[in-house]
Image 1 (cartoon, rainbow over the protein chains, first blue to last red):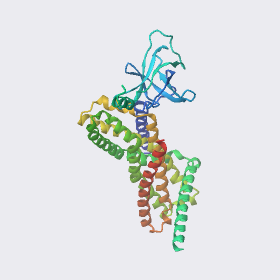
Image 2 (image 1 turned 45 degrees about the vertical axis):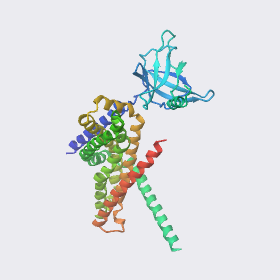
Image 3 (image 1 turned 90 degrees about the vertical axis):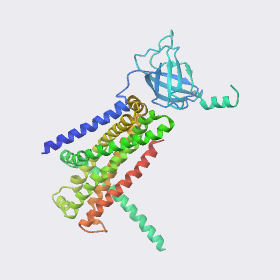
Image 4 (image 1 turned 60 degrees about the vertical axis):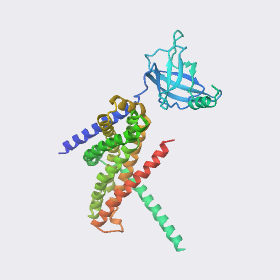
Length: 147
Length: 261
């Protein structure tokens, strides 16, 4: 009797742990240990709306995520750390830009891979960047006729 | 003058009650580490709190998810953004409804049983008999329930979340015709590890609160002024469930506002 109860409790715990694993790993994309990949930095004049955990895409394919956003207080520039998967090779003429999915969707980083620069290694900085497009500023420019 | 006396005595008795809750809590946690042969007692409680509540948790999880799918769809379809249904259902469930509904359901199902069982043992002097045999009542009755609740609540909450997301899939995808890939893709895109942690932290807080309130109401059923004997147990059970539910909802607000910085 006691053995069957223990077995039932064990089954219950297993079921619960499976659900936790499904939530965290499959849906929450939690990284077990250090994610494999290398980290690059990019400097933007504005990353308004970008969040840690946002996707990094090349040609619309997700290849990594934003791991850190901090401010360079000297030049008032945003420094964004990007974790990019190891099998993606980038060169120092790559262009990183902050894009929006849809009109009001989430912000993400789009990378245009370079052509014939020298390859980027862990900790290097992407120098060519395009900052977030300020839709309100664009609309007000159009409305007040300064296009 | 009379008003002042009344106000003062009310404030003092409130402080007394809060203090006795805290002492009970610390005592219960302390006994987790000092009680011998903890594992079989914890397994018995996990069976009572967890396994026997599994069916009802799955049932209300399923229906909560299904109704979220329906309601979310009819709001989102006005903005032509039904693709966000997965995000709406999963975030509502994981951050808010999963922990809260699980805790309220368990307060009604398992918490009331705790109060009644401990209360009956108290009014029939069984706890005194335990103490005579040098078995501390806190260690034998309360500590295993604390440990079992802390283990079981996150498990049941995650089961609730997963079943609820499946319920949203049933109505959103099967009934109303959103793409299956869009539904699950949007969930994966919008649910972050922080959301899931928030849900688990909430369920741990609720586990401790519910066990504390329910066990204490039963343990001190003989001290109640609103009844004697069986009537005291009945009143203790009622107040345990009501106070647990209120405490869970208040704690939910406090945790949410401190997590959403």
